[in-house]
Length: 206
Image (cartoon, rainbow, N blue to C red; front, side):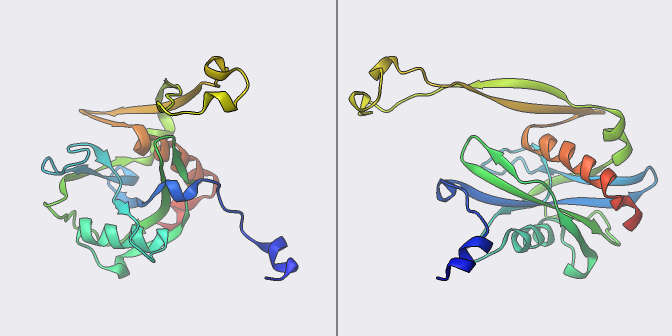
């Protein structure tokens, strides 16, 4: 590999191979209340996070790009055609301290009839972008701490078992909309997406 190519390389993320990769589509629709985000409520029969509110999306399959995964999952979950989806661009990547990365993409969904796959989704609903502009999320900090395995080589580090490990925090957002609570990763992506939608005037595309 040439040295010039090294200068142009896209930096990787150390430890990325230890993270599961997911992608979601932040769907925008035109509604009676104006431009709105479309949310899913996960089916109660699912093994992971049943009943929680999310954007359409899922885990990347082998050889798949994040954008391809987001589109594939949206088509499967909302029962729409590829031609109905207009990708506006990438959102900000969500990195969880729990070993997963989520790649959001902001898109417009045209001629949507509020269909969905009942195997994965129990219902869909919209929330006007204006609501999120007018309501800041409530934020709570979870505290993260280290828990070393029983065979950890304390003898190899200064201070041994008394080493002053740094403790971190993990911010969790909550939005309450009518009887629903949008929280966690989805709420974090919402807060970022609202800022992008407004700053880049993306609502004009709807």
